Amino acid sequence: MFKHNTRLFTTSIRHNVTRPITRPNRLSNATKVDLDDGAEFFFNPPPSSAEAYPDGNSVVSGLLDSNMATRVDTLNAPTLHSRKKSLNFNLSSDQIGEIKEMRRAGHSANAISRKFNCSKGLIAVVAPASKQNRIEHVINQQQQQSTWGFNKHLSRHQRLKRKEYW
Image 1 (tube, rainbow, N blue to C red):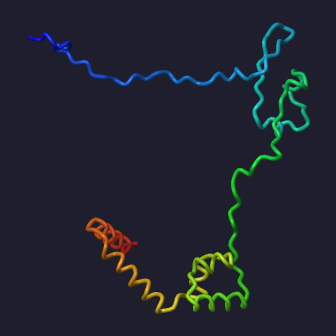
Image 2 (image 1 turned 120 degrees about the vertical axis):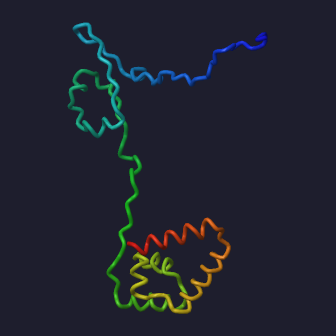
Image 3 (image 1 turned 45 degrees about the vertical axis):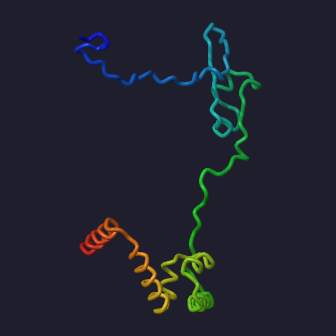
């Protein structure tokens, strides 16, 4: 009856086996020093050891020969984070006039803000878009919204309702 069934009435469910994490041996690159009392001293300097002890006067350097301790040149290392560009909020009257001329010519607030290194909100206050540009923008938005599906219309409507209660 159960000739080809090896499980019979018991079930053997596959389980994921959790294996122990194998971490690299930290002592593989370490420098080994035999001390006078017979103990072994393993020394693995961090890459930032050149900054930590610039003069070489440390507890570890007293135990090791000067040729054993390796230092990493950190002067040529790249910066960790790029500096955030600070925006300019002090515009002269000449710059404001030029911004208004560029806005009348049809330049976007984003392009003007990049040129003068200021925020788009400041451009909107100093030189708001013309009525014709705003109408064109609304028409383009409506054309784009006409291609949306039901779910996108519904989520947009719900978002607008939530914003009413702010």
